[in-house]
Amino acid sequence: MKKVRPVNEPIPQDLNPPFSRDLYETPLSPNPPIFQETFKVTYDRLQEFNFGPPGWLSNEEINLLKHVINLREKATAFCEEERGLLKH
Image (cartoon, rainbow, N blue to C red; front, side, top):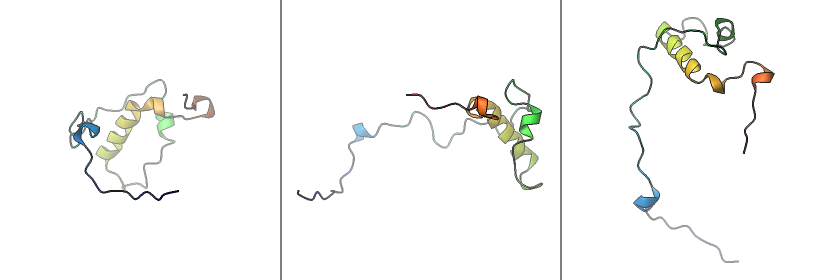
């Protein structure tokens, strides 16, 4: 069997598609809305999250995390019944 050695060549531009959005522009607001309970994310369930020791995050940072948790609530499981499996 013949050994193959890699060659350092640039990738053709058609194999490197452009990004569809500006990577430095965030979809998050610096002033997130006040947390509101949803069917899945409640105040009781938020108490299960560990946001670090008191004072480690500012109130604004905690509010932003709560907002992201609400946006991604379908990806969060709080009990075994809510846990899903990847399907192919």
